Length: 366
Image (cartoon, rainbow, N blue to C red; front, side, top):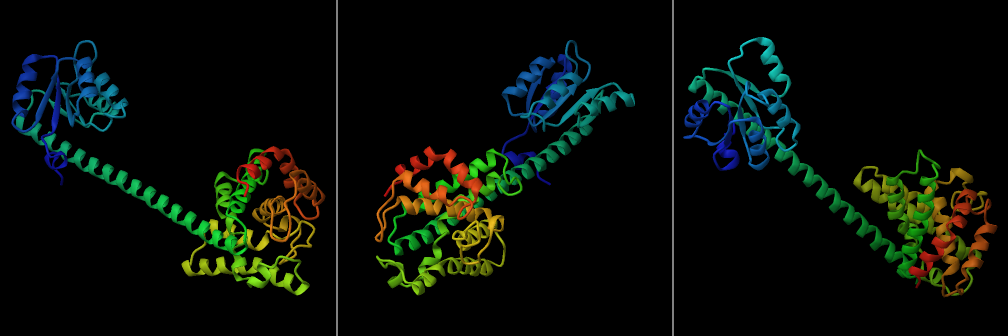
């Protein structure tokens, strides 16, 4: 059992509250060799001492003029900073109902007057040891909670760095800039935020989901690392055979993430979103997309969000095989793809947030 001295490396402090000076002197002298002693002759002074000093235990007279011990105890227990201080009532009241009432307002124990020094010292020692144990466990729990939060933050940072490093690798091979990653992330977030604010897909779109798709969006083209340079970097139009190979980047990205997931032998929501986006961002609303030819809401929402973001950014960005379109031209092509290439709801939201899309395109332009 921990002693109060071990807990604090100093003597415990006991507050004695009694309106009779003789009682204060008697109790103080009894405790002084073993504990630090604070004294108060009324409830108000006692509350002020509790507010100002670190008190480990309170010996509290019940019958006092003005504010009685019950009220003092009640107010002490109402303070968050003092709630755990054990309060032992000093009283000559021996009726069961008086003691029950004392316990109901927060008392830890009763010592009957006239006080027996051995019994008083034993009771104080027991309650201080109990408090020391409780404080130790509380501090341990706080430490463990802080450590858990630190580890979670550390894992989140590692996850983000890994995702962005892999995404940057894919974009570098494709001769595109890292700003494509940033822009598409924010386009996806704008649309997902609007779905959340408007109460759409409430079983899917939560603040956690929005964060997840924002963080995993950069992995949409991770499969391009498996496409030969002759095709990936070709400045002209791809042949039909070359295009079939290019299309395989969606499945290659999905397979890579799936393999990583199997290695850790666990399912994580962010990996699920990453797989959906990598595999499905070239699917089309009418079923004419690839690689699975999914139709409508069979296409995961994360992939539908990514489709709008990716195509818009490709249209307004310069590539080795094309010039950049104006924002108006790009929006018109997106409009034409409403209900065929893109989820109609997402296209409508995109046009409502048109200025935000343009602002992102300009803020993070190449």
